[in-house]
Length: 296
Image 1 (cartoon, helix red, strand yellow):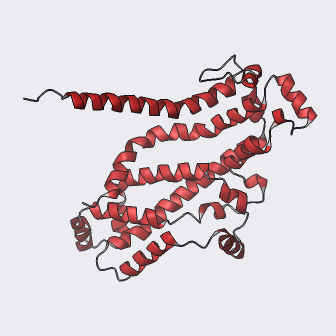
Image 2 (spheres, helix red, strand yellow):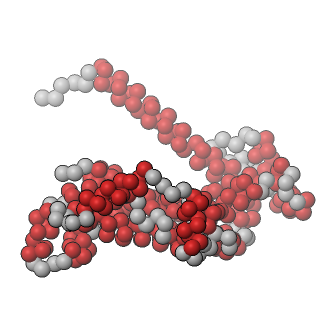
Image 3 (cartoon, helix red, strand yellow):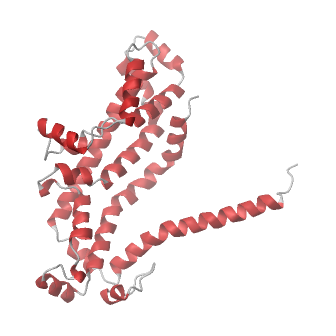
């Protein structure tokens, strides 16, 4: 027979619920405020009385940014960079991690030490730029996709996950004549779907939010990702502060929108793909991280 909950346990549950509620409010308020600001009338925005609900209804900011051709090219390039870098990361990380789980692999210790060293020492931005220039990668798609292919941290997590898979499966496959590539593709990867989905989510979100690498390595605006378009609107344009041209200010006044409408509208547009993707991968998130972090 299960005893009743103690008073201390009930108080703990109540305090925990209150803290979680406050955390949810703290996380949701900025998001709802951005959406409300993007849809509100400019006079309410200028007065600063927008909370989590729009004041009035104005989609002029969305109409303005949707006329920008760089928005669509930025979307296309961000999708290319996100998918390409994530596929390369999953592929090469798997290929790097799997040999480290084989007991009789000769270079196992050397590669492990080499990877650990890279976690403590980095060449820095200038050597990385000079290396990219010498390899003729500057201002190409590859400079955004290739550098993040292999991370020592990811390799060790993949290795830990693979080590939770029973070694008997590999031994049986070897007896049946399978080579290591076949074992990786037909046994390890199908059993690693939670891990792959988790790191696919990490890779897509990380690539989608990345802007510094593109700012440093890309000169052609036609190859800019969406985040640099967002940066232009958020930091380089501030019509209300007088840095915009008189013609632009007059056009915004005629459309009854402010720069905040435009800035918040493009923030919503940039967030939308991640908001759509995340629910489909979220169910793998906790399972993948927990299994990959503990060796059975």
